[in-house]
Length: 488
Image (cartoon, rainbow, N blue to C red; front, top):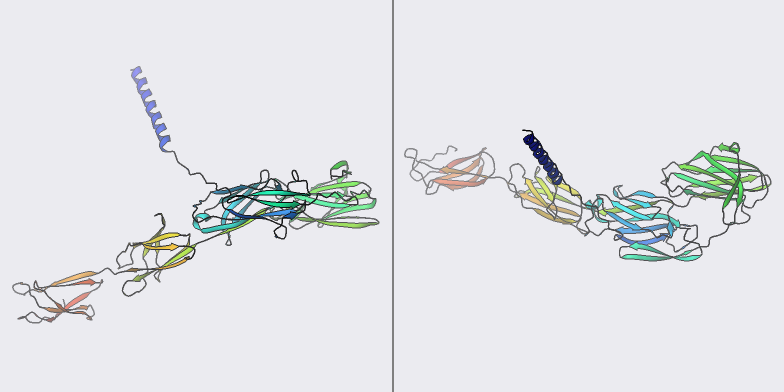
């Protein structure tokens, strides 16, 4: 008994394991991977200066806008989640990682772009916008500077950019890396934090020339769309090498730092050596601006005040896109009277037979309209006729294309009709009587048809009658019979 019991348990466990395995197999879901189209949609590329003018000659410290145009061929079936991926030349450097939406003129998102500072890798992930529009195209912009790790200045650089048919080369003349002027007393620079685009780092080089400045005071005015992080202020006496490397010496006490209405100041006393001041600001726009600025001022007794306004290197990126769609308007009409008909229902089918929309109704004016149709051949198929009319499922086919973006079509319906049959009989014998003549009237007595005669079987038949109430009135009796003009 025990052995049998164990055997049954083992069989039961084996059966259960089979069920679990089978369940696992049958529940497997296949997910289609997104397609990367690489650089095949990229049409043109150029370098623009800060004024948006194409250039191939830049200073060593200049910023450049890498400007791309792109387009998706209508024959390419791009889906939401598919990507365009390419890499910017290694001789160019980004200030920070980038992420931005590419939108059309109505604010609809065409895709989302990301750029990695470490690799210069650009990825544009398309939204379902590309599935609903044709002639999808746009522009992309990336603010860059020369990568000073590989560019030394005063040279010609061959920048290789990916494009749809491979690559293209832009030869760029790079200006000289200029040394610090030995008479410099004030210089300032800043940059966007590599991992936090809302954080700006600022560094001020004070008295590189090491002149005597009695009662020296440094003042900084914070620019627009920024707030000062007062606790981040640091200042050190020290020395600069010819290639701008600072060696810090004694720190300047924070008691010398004072907040002002629009920034801060640092009391430097009788200054005879160099000082480096650093601090950070936080943007109030989330790092969305291309550049941020601050103004620095150095004053002292018997010293001509120096002032400089400084912009961060241009950073960020952006893009725009767009696409084209068409529309169709169908008018539903009575086949005879051409009166418009409300209440008809249709479904919309594309060239692949996919039903895109259902239960689309004609309005009180007998019209239905469908917008935002990408280029394709479609069919409108009637699924419900207007009340009192025959259903006609013959497809209404139309094509949306470059030269046919606003289509108008008409669909006619015929009324549901009935028939009536009258048999003329002898009142006594019930024999059928030929040759009786009638007219057909509506319920108000208006004559609709005349000269309707019973045949040799005593029968007359009227067809194609629209729904309503009717009556027959005898106008001529059969030979040998009395006329009976009571309505039937």
